[in-house]
Image (cartoon, rainbow, N blue to C red):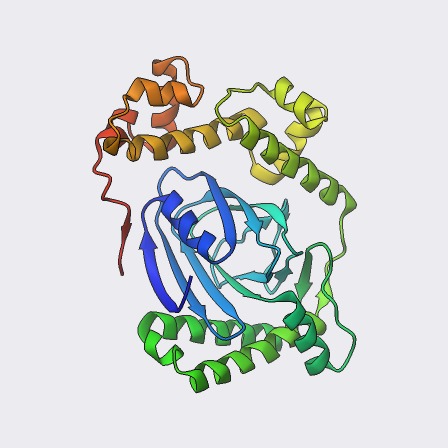
Amino acid sequence: MPGSGTRTFLEPDHYEASLRQTQIEIVIALSCKFKARLTWAELHDLQVLRCEEDFPRIAYVCLEPQLSFVTFPARSASLPVWGGTELRRGEIALHGRGERLHQSTPGSFMWNAIALDPVQLEQYGRALSGKPFSLPSEGKILRPSPRDMARLRRQHAQVCRLAETKPKLLAHTEVARAIEQGLIETLVACLTDASVRADDPIKRRQARIMIRFEEVLAEHFREPLHTAQLCKLIGVTERTLRSCCTEFLGMSPSRYALSRRLSRARVALRDAGTDGASLLELVRGFGFAELERFEAAYRAAFGETPLTTFQRAPAVRFMNP
């Protein structure tokens, strides 16, 4: 997403589309109501993001391998669960290249991200720290010193404030380079002088199972697969899959799979007015054979009937600030 700015979204898929432009692929699987605000700034080498979300949700996040990502929560009451592990206050996540993981938030939440080319990050790390520095192949959770963490939050917030109020100022080369240099120095200090949370091999194995779970759901997104069928396709026992889903998603495999299909169906229903597709055809296209059961599940998930979504004007997609 070029330049800098901010935008408010009322539909999860439009929020997802804007994040995709920043090289973050995110699929929001469960959010009965939704409002999010995305603030972004493209500097010379750095990409800075702030994501403010007003409701609890579960999402599957895929980070593009051409960038290295560092994420950390802003000062908010709730903390996210990244890949089955709750991020503690004062911690940051240094993600592996192309990392795929689940993220869940228990309530209103704000999270920050910084991204840049991994080769550049390693070069900055060695030059500024004066010691060997290489990025891990898998994600790590780090705890920088309180001083470095406070500086990182402050400088990140400064960039986002300028993106919201004075985006033209960030377009000036000298201003952008000065701000970026300070942020890079602080980021390197956070990455090179931090303590590392001990790795959990059980969590790593569970994370791989959950990625395969998502792959199976993507391959069969129009089919109402039962838990036994999912387990066979993934290659794990039902007990293992249920345990992983409880740990990572807080729900059963079948409920999560249903929420994914309901979310896809909702987007199709909302945008269907342009092609004249019938409600019944759309519902059956996502593997829902019984309209009454679909309506009950849909109302429980989104607080409105499928017909209400179907009849809503497609123009209501997002709000400008």
